Length: 441
Image (cartoon, rainbow, N blue to C red; front, side):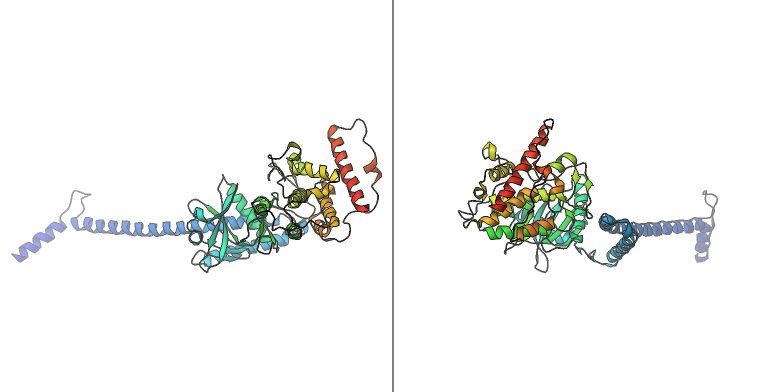
């Protein structure tokens, strides 16, 4: 019986099947091989997809920084082109190596640390509204506490059709490249997540901004004395003394520490320029009331734009008034026009903020008033440089020219001169007359 059963089994396996006339055992072996091959293929393919996903993630982390590095040659001359290109390539290589070598996705670069999205979510309590300390057209700023206990400000740039990515690169480049005691320090950054988060991590300045102290409810006497205001005014142009055109100079972008030291923030509109360079933009950006007329009309971007804006800011510091205030009488709505009219009427003392308890010395006030007038000169070429403004404000002697006015300044206009030129000439005459009166008085 046993032999009979064995012979029967062998005959079954050796019997031919209808499938291509193959024997049964051949088909069984072929089926097993195919199943194993499919299993191995699925296993290997799944592993490749994971690696590809990981590679894409790493690439997304690198591309913004890589773009920033490529943009670092905007102020280089032709004589520096080859050397800076070599440095840029080296830097990109270093950044990529740092990212690939890091096991937790963090890097430590020359411009600050790379933070993971999870770290910053934890630091800000999932970007809780309770931690919001500032908000603007380009993003929201949160107060955050890192795992080591340090307090930071986390700026989440709003993704507005690619604008957030542009502002991210501009701000990292501007602050990362220009180091100054009066600039808010960039600690780190992050760009990741399904929603493409653009996050910048700054030092935390815990005393508010200049706008809050000038226009907020501070009581009958402002803590911003004349001396404190001049300290802020001098520190402000020092923060822009390198060739950085901020394009959005205003009081809300001046942060203050506990010792009233100013810190320039919000470089979302900044442009880096080489010395004596101009840049034409088709999109005029800034804050109404601070933007220079020449920039608004021509789009020509240069250091003179920020000088004009600083002149308006200095007027704001002196008077405690906003650049544009529709709650005031018609002749006082525009700060620049009202300011020039008051100086022309020899009422400069009335320009000082009434909340200042101790008024400034007359000579110090005259000096600052004339700095304002020089900064808002309608001829952008006649405006002082940022470095010159600092010397003017710090000078004990009269900061301007001592020679008489040129014949060109005193010759009356030709009858056919346009109306706009008449207005500009009249304003220059006011400035020149007031300058001489205050100097020789």
